Amino acid sequence: MDSREASLHLATALAASARASRLLMGGGESREAVTSLGHDIKIKGDALAEKVLLEYLMERSPFPVLSEERGEVDREGGETCKWIVDPIDGSLNFNRGIPLCCISISLWRGNEPILGVVEDFNRGEIFSGIVGQGARLNGRDIRVSGVDKRSAAILCTGFPVYTDFSQEPLLRFLSQVQEYKKVRLLGSAALSLAYVAAGRADAYMENNIMLWDVAAGAALVLAAGGKAEWEARDKGLWFKADNGLI
Image (cartoon, rainbow, N blue to C red; front, side, top):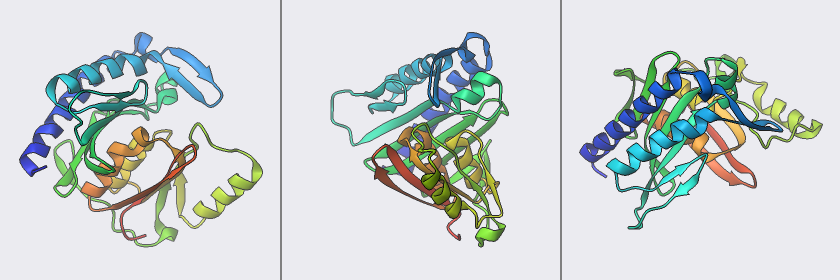
């Protein structure tokens, strides 16, 4: 995919996100919980925003869509690219009025990210990027930080739905994060990765996270000069991204 084509697809993702953002900023019934089981919650806004995003993306591009709520929405043609969408990353935060949530849209080819959009509709911050072409925040260029030691770095992480909270896994988790200067749990993987791309945080790591939670953020970090790596696990992905120095 050449740079012009990627830019056109990025414009499509930005326009789709803007439409969903307007819907979610209205609040109201979109904050209401539909189900709440264990550590997971589904709210009305998830389905409402997803409908807006799917309709816009599928009307304006030839690619299928993988979305958190509906899974994979196929279309004929066997395209190698697909949209990966999380209508609201940080649903519980949105439900409770905690302003740490976002819309996440990315385009991948196979197992590689091409572009990503993360829109923090509470703050009016729109992170966007094309791998190999750079990343932006509200039109301004952004890059990952220059922090090169864990002892000086901020790590973002979290506990996904399928986290094992028994003692041994938690102690193993502690051993992985205790070298960092500070650890932050925002409740949104996509927003955490956008912060890494913008240099606000220096690294992100999470286990058993789902692809749609990190797909756009991975594109942003790579576009901003960082690195990202992931590995399939039984209940999701082991995923790590950082500024490339730590």
